[in-house]
Image (cartoon, rainbow, N blue to C red):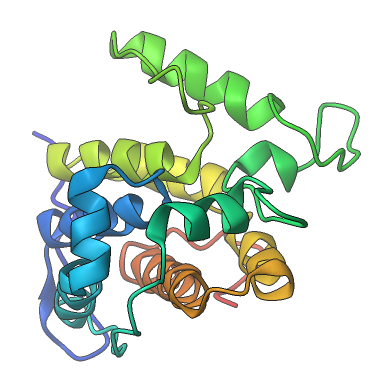
Length: 208
C-alpha cells in the first residue's frame, strides 16, 4: 500500500495532497499562455481569487492583486520577451547544465529528465511548451500528489522546484505587471510550504 502523504500544516490543519494538487493546478494557469477562458478568468479576477482561496487551505495567506491589463500581451512581455527583457518560466534557463555551468538557454538537463518522466507514463508534451516549463512541472507534481506517491513526489520536488527562487528574482527584475510578480511570489511560498509539510527539504539544507 502506498504511504499516505497527508500531513499537518503550520496552522495545525490536515494538508491533503489533493488540496495541494488543486493549488498547483490553479497556479499552473498563471504561467500558461492564456487562452480565451484564462483571459476571462484573469480579467474578471476569478483566477486570482481562486488561488488565494485555495492557498489559504494550506496555510498560505495572500491577497489577490488587480487583474493584468491586456492579459496576453502582459504574458508575452513577462515570459517570452515580447518587448525587452523577460523571465522564461523554464527550469533549464536557471539550472546548471551537465558541465556545471549556467547557460541561460533551453533544453538542458531538467528538460531531458522531464522527457524521460513523460515517456514513462506514456504522456505527450504539448508542442508549444518546453518539457521543463513550470506549468508542466506543476501538473506533473499534481499527478504524483493525487496518486499518493510519497517518495516519488519528494524526489521530484527536490529535483525540479529548486530553481524557483532564481525565477522569482528574474520576474521581479524584469516584470512590469504586478499580477505576475504576485503569482511567482505565491508560487514560491506555496512550494516552500509544501516542501516543509511533506519533508521535501534536502537533508543538507533547510527551507529558505
